[in-house]
Each structure stands twice: as C-alpha cells, then as structure tokens.
Length: 563
Picture 1 (cartoon, rainbow, N blue to C red):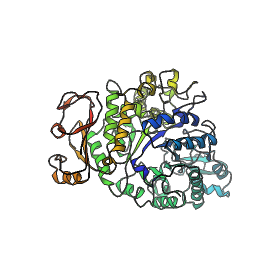
Picture 2: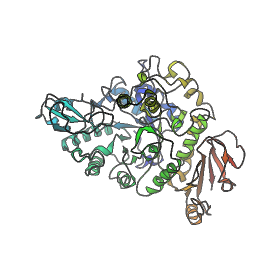
Picture 3: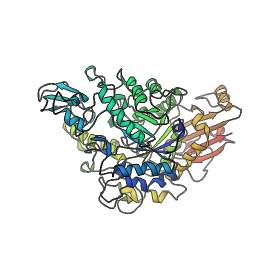
Picture 4: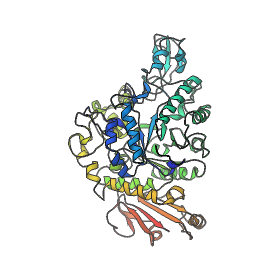
C-alpha cells in the first residue's frame, strides 16, 4: 500500500459510496463491491483521493447496514472479503484510499454480543449494552428514539429493557465498559492492517452518553474515550479519521480536530444544513433557507478553525436530501445551480466530501409511500398519521427531507434501470435518469460532472485553497454569496485594506488571491463586485459564455484570480 503524508487529507477529495445504490455487478438489484471496482476509473477521472465506504459488514439490513451483526466480515449481498481486499488493492493502485464507515454506538440485535447479552444477566456480554429493570409494558421512562417510538425494548429472557437511540434492532453499546472499548479497538486494528486509509465514525458524539442524566451527546467521557481510541486503535499516523457529530460546535470541533493529532482529523458540522428546517432541527418541518445565516455560518466555521482544527466541506451524504433540490433549482436551472453550489463550496478551506451522484446533479425523488425503504421515513409517516397530519402534508415533508432522496440508485446511463442493475433494483431509479446520467455528462465540457472535475483540479492546483485566509464579502446581500481567499503577503494587504460591508478593498503584494462570486437565486441581478473583478483572471464560470458585464445571471458563479 502506498505511504501517505500524515496530513494528506487536508488536500483530499473524499467520495462517499453507498454500496447498496452504487453499482450492481450480478443483477440481484443491490449494489456490491465488484460493482464499485468497475467504477474506480470513473472516480479516478473525477479526481477522487479516497472513497468513504458506507457499511458493507454483515447485517440484517434493518437500517441499510448501520445495524452490524459482524464487524469483521462482508455481508454476502455486497460480496466477499476477497472482493473487499481486491477493492482496497485496486483503489490503491489508482492512488485512491478506502475509508470504511465505523458504527460504534450500537450493533444489530443479531450480533453475537447481543445474543449472549439477552440470554442471561450473568453473561459477560450483558454489560456490553444498556439495560434497565422494569415490568413488561411499563417503560423505565419516556425517552424517545431518534427514529420514532420509545427508546426502550423489553427482553423477556432477562426481564429487562435495553436502550436503543435509533431503531429497535440497534441496541446501544455501553461505552462505560472497558471491555467493550477494547473489543472495538481490536476490530479497528483488524481493518487498519487490511490497508484502509482511515475511518468515518458514525454518531461519534454519542459515545459518552449518560442516559440517566439525559446526556445523549457530548458526555463528560466522550473526548477521553476518543483520545484512548486514537492511541489504541488508530495506530497509523496517516489515517483520515472524521466523526459524524450533529451536535458539534466550534469549541468541540477544536477538540475533535486538534492539530496535535490527539483525537480525530476533523468532525462533520451540520450547522449549515439546519438552516432550512424548523427550530430544534426538526427536518420534517422544512422552511425557506435562511440565506444570510448560511453565509455567516460558513464564514464562522472557515475562520473559527484556523490553526486549531480542520473543516469538513459537504452539501450531501446518505442522510440528507440532494442539494440541488434543497438549495438550488432542480428544474429549469438544475445544471447551473448544481455547478453554482459546487463553486461556492469548493473554494473554501477544508477536506471536500462528495456524495455519489452529486457530481451529476442528481435530484430528490418523489415516490408514493410504499416505495420508500428508509426506516426513519416510514416511522415518521406512521407517527405523523397518528398525530393527525393529512396525507398531503406528510408526503410533502417526505419528498423534501427523506433520507431516501440520497439513496435512489446511481444513474450511470440511459439504459433500463439507469445502468445500475440488470435486474429489479432494491429501490426504484429516479425517472429522470434518461436526462441525468454519467454517460451523458463525462464527455460534455458543459456538464455538472465536468464542472466538478475542473473545480477539483483547481483546488489541487492553487495552494490558496488549502492554506489561504477566508474573508466573507457582502454578508447582508440577499442573493450573492461572495468571499475572498488570499495567500502570502496579499493576505496581509487585504486585512489592512478592507473597507465597507464585509471588507472589499484589495491589498497589494505577492501571493495568490481567489475571489468567488455567486448568485444564489434564479433572477438576473446587478453584480455588486463588478468593479473589483476588473483585471482579474477568470478561473471558472458555470456558464459557457461570459454574458453581459455587470450582471449575474440566474445561479451564475465565477472564480476570479489575481497573482
């Protein structure tokens, strides 16, 4: 396996593959590891440095693999261990690392540990999970699961309830038991020795929960546990380690991503993706995007981790809707808005994460309820019905926010089933695959794919993207997202020469400067930075032609550069 620099991930582009929906090699309708191997050259051509691989482990698939029954083996629906070893080797040959998803907060109820745990209170595995005494039908308390319903499930064999923060078939592990932690660390070392390039840690902020104190995230032992895991499990210093932490703020992000390497490389912050849902982060109550807050939030994270942490840059993953349907326009201006959203994100400092199909501008789906597969979506539909939500309101929320928006099969070409499978897909392909697919875009210089490829190339060519300062411009503008990145003595000049709203003066000196200007909406507007752009070189534009000077067309985005 190739040796990577310790901080290779700072300049990397990570591409998330959801194996079930990526590429099916054997016609059973479910994506698999041999299918991923087939598409490695496609990912290489895009400029990908690593693949974040959603769970491929043995699982009853109650939550599409996030309910693991054996951490050390591959589920037969995805292939074999030999297939996975081939994937690691073939990806490495192309300079691409494999970053598996680690689900350490809970297991499946079909894991051997839990089978033993529920057989007897005296079995050592019993304390691997979280139990409370009680009587059948009388819950220990009123705690609710994130996927709906009570957080407690009765086990008659031991006359106790077990705690599950997510689905019933996902009992939470007891991280307070040192034997549990050691078992998990040993498993992680098993995969490190297989040659993986790092790990994504599912709901990392839940590891230190203390449920009797109603602490479900950021418990007092969370960071000590992570530091212990870093020392005992992440035994190579070149591993990319990124935690999913819905509760993260700047203070905790500086702990997760401490530059001394004591914890993780970084943590995902979701604050920017909470700005179009109701207060309390209730995704089933979508509201219009708070655009000014989006700009200020992104700027806060860009400036708040300089020298003391590292940012994650992402619009999509397997748990959130398609960004072009969410913040863009998935109709008339689908391609333009998809490229604009990429241009806004890709010019920032941090490690870039792309979710499969995002590079094509894939959109949300709108199916009848019987075609959805996601457990949280189905639970919401039932609970909202009991609460009196009318059918139309329930389905509108699901069409906007269901996790299945991101899980429809990858759209490879315009053949039946979008080239994803020769059989019946596990979930229906989005009907727009005939217009939106990889085959139509890879050879088209004006496609969303080509824009992604070019922006990735620019990220790697210009050190200012990795190392430069960030300055938000026009923070109060209602339609324009603009910022400046500067490197070298130019950065000093800019800081000293700023003026007006957000600081718009250009400093002198050597170095690099990139100015990103984007119209976030679908109306033509005056370009408020037209004077500043004069004399600067255009590095990227999401329209084929220059257009009319002094205006920004619908969803137009431009990167300018001065040296």
